Amino acid sequence: MTRISSASTLILALFIPIFWFVFFGSITMAFLISDQESLPFGFYGRLRWIILGLFILIGTGIYCTILKLKRIDIDNDYIYVSNYFKTVRIPYEQIESLTCKSISIRQIGKLNLKHKGIFGNKIYFIVESEKYSLLQSKITSQH
Image: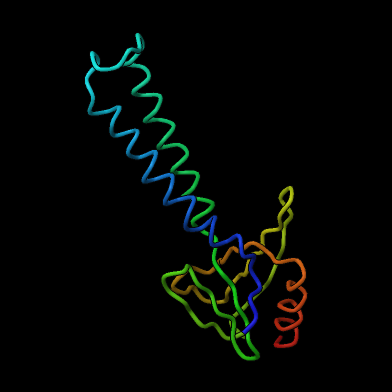
């Protein structure tokens, strides 16, 4: 089996969201449950809402972007899509299209499936540049 997605997917899809929601969630909760007299800030009431707003805003951004990334592996007959908790095997015939888009220093790949699966009908992954052509050739040979 050959890994197509980048090794940085593990860090982006697991460690960053866990760190954000646990660490900054704890800080946000501490600000929400503490009383005004225990902190030396004069603008504590507004600071409480600013921190809560930032936590929700950045958490929503993480949910809508980073948590959508999947790990992609291939073999001769199937493509394997994983979110590190669950792995799904998809035959190449089920892939409608494959696209790649560059965002600054990385490339994001998108698989469009013919039918909706466990992870939906659009699967996003960080492209490992050297192996992307291998995936592309497997998909085009099946169509």
